[in-house]
Length: 85
Image (tube, rainbow, N blue to C red; front, side, top):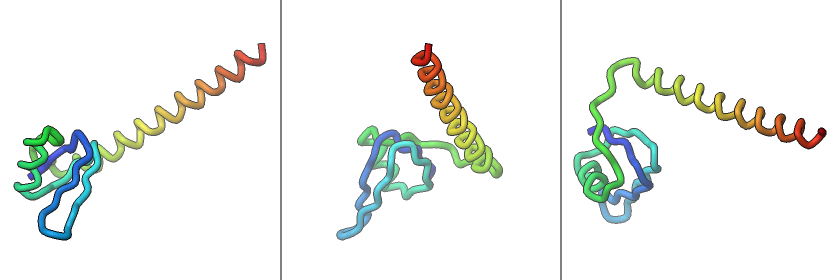
């Protein structure tokens, strides 16, 4: 079952075993894990991704990171320019 975690969660499938999921992760998990996450309000169920969607999401994430990096650099450049006036 596919799940998007909306908050950090520790799932304990057996004694002595803990699986840590971070907010924002999209994972194929067991039904028990999904039920626990949804009940706790830490995850939402998703439809299974179609072929090719994973690659597209990776590209989208990379583009978002580049956009943030450029905006950050523009902010720093604008601060330096304002300070030199």
